[in-house]
Length: 281
Image 1 (tube, rainbow, N blue to C red):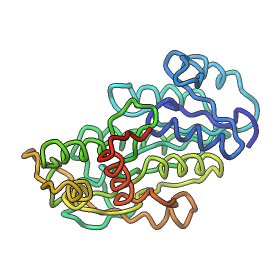
Image 2: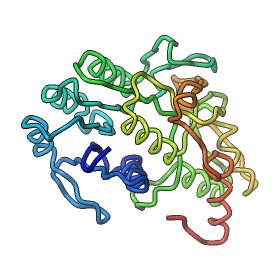
Image 3: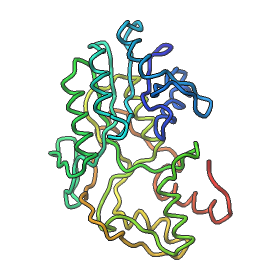
Image 4: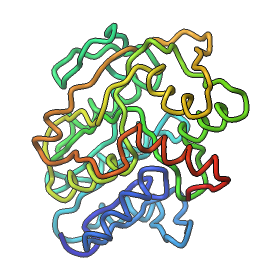
């Protein structure tokens, strides 16, 4: 991959910023694409309209796009449709989807062939984006990410680990969705590396990307136990309950795990620093 081969749409965000950083660590330039072309945390970006103009007029050679624009509030499907109108078969796009597309499987294990069960508006949006990518004349990959965790070094987003630990310390409880329900979990840095590797290697196909499976109650207990706190449900209906098989992502060398990235270790590290009055950034 040469200079300016990778564009990261949403590269200023929670996962996108780490994707850009990981690309640079590996000697590649990743260009952040944002709505207005602003600079955040010292990282410049290319404005969305300029990005589309570059693609219309040809930027030379094949390019890869990491698509992390997330959610209806950002007009994700509309922006994706605009992108797909100006690219061709030489373009590779890896899109972020979500394991929420599996819905309520009563804790059953889901692989990439498991039928979708679209029970939330976000799951429906992600499925529509997957369908749009699949119908476009581009090379494409789709990564269905698990429930994300990992302290935000930008200081913008309060991570679920921070919320759990703070509540455990202050209130003696940790409040979560239905504690008996399962989720697949994923550290943000694992997500970032998987996205970069998919873009670098132009990996084709759909992949589940999670590193562990825990019930909500068990996951939150990692934060509760050090403070003698209890885990309780939030009393709201949780329409999703699934475990995730990510063996294909491991086989494709998209997913790995580094020291401290597993959920118990990440929570324990933050809890220890919290008790000592330190914040991790």
